[in-house]
Length: 74
Length: 244
Image (cartoon, rainbow over all chains, first blue to last red; front, top):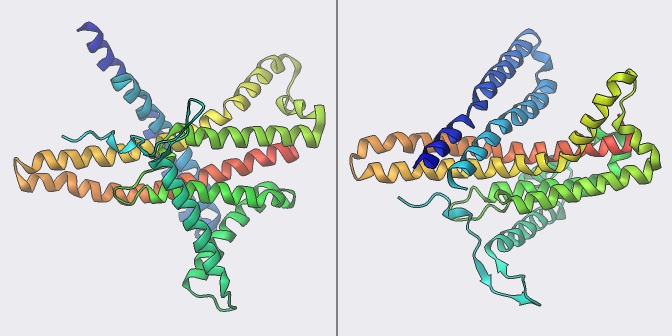
């Protein structure tokens, strides 16, 4: 019974990195919008970099989710 | 409630076994064959009657080609264009796997770590061998970036080696985890919708609406992950060709 409780707590704790990813994604969106707002001509170059950084950062949240699921069901 | 993990189960279609090794033709293998057939035939059909003013299918084939070709040229330079066929194949394998997974009742072979790990390990070995062939023993200098003071090197070199060695793990985990988690979320919310339906029909529309949004997002992720997988492959090639 105690092991089950510890498992649930661990699964929840494993999701804490999501907070950091949330901050990071906010930063990415903010600086992208800032840059395009200042220089709309650069949007085409920034688009590619934006999507790359977005996907790389978003993957970290998914890693956390997978670890949490492994703790829960593994 | 239906099990959301059911979609990832590998089923044998034609059971086969050679010398005690299970080489059955599974649903995963079936969808890989479909991906290979579809991508090859669409690209050849599109370019068969190639005209100066392209039709819709030709525009699709040409823009896919130039997307990857520009990516390789920008990231690896003219030297890297030799490896363009390899990188384009990787791109189409991953893109077809991700996109066909969005078809209902289909199977997403990129949601299995063994598939993505095989791809990533192959890329890793290819790039490492390429680096040693091009630079010989000088390739070891890759782990010691120029301009680092001597005391710091004791810290930097092990770190560089670890980050190099974890490349196949992160590359495969990123694709696998994104595809698995995305499909899992879709099925979990579909499950909410079904179990709420028996209580109140109106409330069940909430997870339904969320699911519609998630499917659009999943299409974005499916394309983006194929793009990221390819661009990282390009970056690894650049490291092996130019070193820093």
